[in-house]
Length: 359
Image (tube, rainbow, N blue to C red; front, side, top):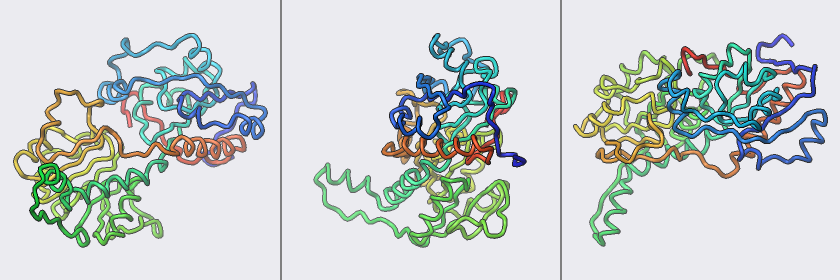
């Protein structure tokens, strides 16, 4: 077991798998699990932070500690026994709360909420759900592109007003899209755009090795080249995670070099966008439109000025598709559990975020 991605199980006690996300529990076939892993204990004890605290943990990792929900006795006992955790969230200071914990399978691709949990201090391995929602999210991006360029909103308004007047859209084939972040979601967006006849340019932090160029992408640049090429884009799609490097990546200076006809779409993380700068660009006609499925604060407050920004299309973090999602999470977990038990590399292993620099 020399691979750095491999993890060995602790055989000093009967291993306990704690499924802490209730919707995943519904996807579990208890009989199948017990037949495949007869020596494992399977617990279902719900633990889920209110969504607002996930956002707060990103913006102020060391704040709001006293207001976060405390563990119940049942939750505390379950975490104390767990060697493996399947979850969306986790309590702070996991090395103390869950001293036996060796591996977390996160149900989503985002891992920022674990930055305050001390995974690095506890030597806890983290795998995420990257790729599980990449298809529906990329479909959502394509839908927004079609909706904006084909003027579907105008057609809807005309129908409601019983008004007949041609309102033509634009040809999408031939337009240039820049996909910022070529992870699972970005790559799915890229090849779908290419299939529509669009010219696709990618922004990726690490260089592509020969033979691993993303499908459909004509050129790949490092992030520092984004300001130089942003003016070429008809569409800019952000699919980046939250990190120190991506916070406010899309700011006033970047919006200023985009063409006034450009459409900006964000399905990554809300912290990557300076929302005031985006609103100013839209109000000033310096961007054609923007579509945000994620915002810096979620849920978005009713009094947020974003609701009324012209040509800004908001959706409440709804680009994933729930049908079959938890079943795919459980299938990924079982695949990784087999690997974990045999000492093989785990799929989707990621570097745990730290208290100092949530990722």
